[in-house]
Amino acid sequence: DAKTTQPPSMDCAEGRAANLPCNHSTISGNEYVYWYRQIHSQGPQYIIHGLKNNETNEMASLIITEDRKSSTLILPHATLRDTAVYYCIVRHTGNQFYFGTGTSLTVIP
Amino acid sequence: NAGVTQTPKFQVLKTGQSMTLQCAQDMNHEYMSWYRQDPGMGLRLIHYSVGAGITDQGEVPNGYNVSRSTTEDFPLRLLSAAPSQTSVYFCASSLERGIAYGYTFGSGTRLTVV
Image (cartoon, rainbow over all chains, first blue to last red; front, side, top):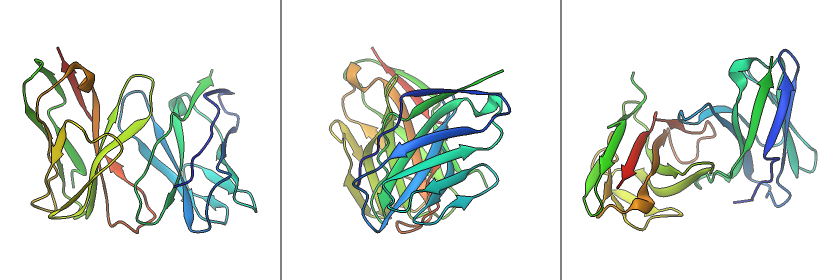
């Protein structure tokens, strides 16, 4: 599975959009990009995933570059409850999820 | 529908003791995994199973055993606990190995080995 690179920490003002980047330059054509988050010490929570196209759900949007070497998770209106560690993972169908250290997002009042 | 249930939530063991961490899911998921998370670190895969009767090793399998006799249950056994196994353990399940929806995680077991 391709490895990912994320900034260790980011801040975002409450109510503003949070844009979390992820580099996955060695991604192969059949690997999905997944995003999870972990609030405090709870179990990780699935947010969104995509292969080639941009995706949107009730929680977030996922923008994947055309060459698929990077992606951005967008939380459109960050709240204090979005403070968490966000993990970007690339995974080939059938293989396991391997988590890195993620980005610690702090939403500031 | 309880999702993924882990027991116990907290456990303190003495070095050399053995114990089993329980994980059960009621979603008929084929795919189950165990992860450990040490302070300030991401999750590391211990063992996984693609279905009843089938298990395989992840990144950090040493000191742990698993079995999958039913679809619902995937217990993790610590054979002889060591302080290095102090960690938070998460169990996760997924509908099938090829599905793109990702994992559902349990709430974790916090283990301290003294």
